Image (cartoon, rainbow, N blue to C red):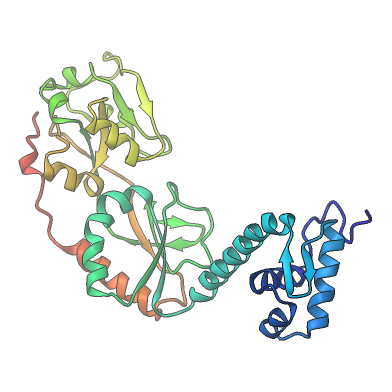
Length: 313
C-alpha cells in the first residue's frame, strides 16, 4: 500500500491522531467533532487519511454507531499515553514561569544528606511552593535556561556563573562503628579498604600527604575503590566495606546519629565547597526567593559539632 508518510517519518499528523483518539473514546465522529471544534465530515476524512496511512482499518461503521477494530484497540492506549505525556510536558514547561513553581537543580549528595532531612520544614512552612528538583552528580558546564536556583559543588565559578558560597568544608575519613573499633592509628587505617571519588580536588593521596608525621614515600597507599558520588561511598562505608573520605556537610547528620564514625581526628581544609547560584533576572521569582532565604538561614544556623562521634588520634 502506498503510505501517506515515508518510512523516515513514521508518525502520522497530530490532528489525525487527535481525531482518532476522540472518536475512539466516544465511538462517534459527531461527538468527536464537537469536542475538537470541527465538522463531522472533517473528522471522518481525517480518520480515513489515518487508516490509509497506517494501512489498517480502525473503525467498523455500524448502523448504530462506530466499533473499534482489534488494530484500533491495540493502538489506542499508545496514542492516549502519548497525548498524556505531551500534556504533562506542556504543563511543566508553561508552569516554570509561575511564581509558585520552583525549578531547583541541586548536587545529588547535598540533596540526599543535607537537604532531604530538612526539606519537610520548608514545605510545611511554604505549602504554596511546588518543587521540581533535578539532581545531577556533577555540575553542568552551562547554566540551564529553565532552572531558577542551582546548588553546586566546586570552586565557585562555572561558565561565568559566580555562586554564593554556602559552606567551608574539611575532609576526613569515616567508617562504620564496627570498623572504627579496628582503627586506632593511621597505620591501622592503611590496612583497610579505601573509598573515594574521581574528579574532586582532594583525594586520599592529598589527605595522607597532609597527615602529620606520615611520609607517603615510605608508606604504601592501599588500593582505592572509586565511585561517582558520595551517596554511594558513604553507603558503602556504613555497610562496613571500607573507609571513605567525607566532608562536613554530607557527613554531619550521619556522624551525629552514630551511623558513621570518624576513626581519626585529623582533617584537612578543602578547596571546594557548596555554592548557590541564582541566575540573573530570577531574583523576584516568589518561590525561588522564598527558598533562597530559607536555605541561607538554615546554613547559618550553628552546628552541633562532631564531638560525640568518638574521633581518635
